[in-house]
Image 1 (tube, rainbow, N blue to C red):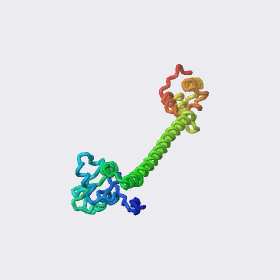
Image 2 (cartoon, rainbow, N blue to C red):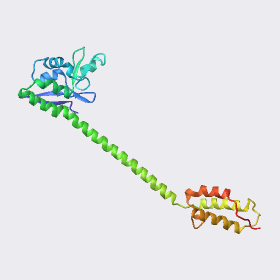
Image 3 (cartoon, rainbow, N blue to C red):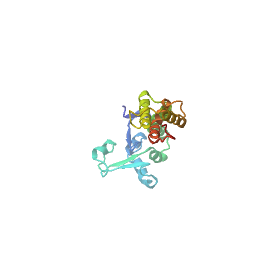
Length: 231
């Protein structure tokens, strides 16, 4: 990855190191003086004279030994052991308002478009990618919910399998016969209970009970009391 950009200053091309702090691209007073061909200390003087107009965290960041180690301070291109100041795009534009010569306009345009806005373009691309990813994930979540709804609807339409049919018939047999295997069959009671199940769950046969209704039918059979018993 290239960590510098080229700024055309008159007939020369200068390399400006890309520095970022707190998610923003920043420059130093020395960068500004060098690129604008101003005497050393010009940018810092303008800053001190108008200090009350600059917002900390928006237009500039103070890099001090209390907050950063010496090697971290040097990483930002600041050589003073006391630390220094990093200038954001808004701070830079405020500082160079008094620079009205032709060179100043050309340098400003290059810095804004190639340096500061270059980061914004990259940031916007990342934001777009992040939003697209979020949209995909949201779409997947919606699709998952819809698939779950479809599965639930399909499940609600599935009738008993053979094992579940035997389970229900066994419960009916036990209820009607009273758990006495030698007791004679009672066709009337079977018919009565089968009919109540069919009517109550609106099915042509107890075998056509839907799976999700099975437990309710079993509970009904367990509590069932016939209207009358055959002798």
